[in-house]
Length: 474
Image (spheres, rainbow, N blue to C red):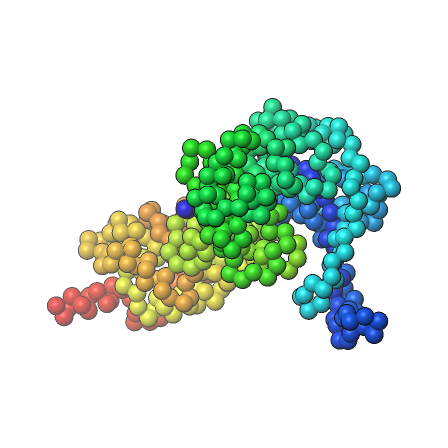
């Protein structure tokens, strides 16, 4: 399956559900308490992170998608901490604040990256379901996808009212279900139980065939558009009526902490669908995101650059020969990491020492080097009959093997001006006895504030000279 990075900035998502504050007390341990056989933690750092539905919204915003959040809190310091961190991340927050009830807080005591103790501060909320539904109806016209992030804490009282409201407006509904009654999610576009939650409803599945059969039956009973079962180290299984099952393997390189992995899955799914991806593509992206988040400690959000790099690894575009679309994606990611892009171009027909030295010098002008080469037809127009000696595929393969070169792309025109207008490198480099104003594309690069630099070439080293020498000896 070929993956691409969606336009998350055009993918508004509305999240409704149980918000909570994940609080971490970090400190060292060097002794056992004299009062009981437990370690003494000297707390030296307190960290607050949005949890539950708030973490889903935070993940959506971290991907660069507009996120709106409706939830229930108390009137207390924890609610203020949640609002501050979510607002800072760009989440549009709509909390129903209830006096005399605390915001849900999950406190974890950590030492040396190990969780020693968790304490939960929570009470079931006396939610005003009608007021919450009114908030959702008011925000739905701004959303492309609605997410019900259900932790069974009381924020979601009438799931059907919300599902039907979204369906009337043509907004898909994704639900992360909880409890032993999935009928409350009837008519949802997609639900995302983990395997334990799924088997609590349908019974134990001895193999994939039984999982698929029971999943199909559940979809029929609940009139679901699709069902995604997350299966830990066994990956994910996507079921859709009248489609073969899609099994995706787990992508985690190292599992450090599974906290919040379900939030990452549904947030990436929602943002991808809102951006116009089809469901299998969205699930594949969510699977990549889950593989990243389980390598982090505690509740964590996946950023767009992190997901983009995972997509690049999947497509083999971290280095080497790329299409233009892959190149633009790779450059966007490099820039997100503060890297300077250098661009040079040429025919590079027979690679020689002069080319290698020149490309090493070009690479030294920044962090990433793009080499654009003329295709065979344009080389023939520029160099005459009999050229190129090597086809464009072979020339690109040789260039991609050089340590100084990050990405190789070809172009069909005689000059790289169209490519320069799309890539917009920070530095355009050319070798030879040119003046800067003679470099093709210099005006394009300087117009947007880029730099143009001319480097020298190694003397007595040229493709034409090599070709002539071979011809003289033949």
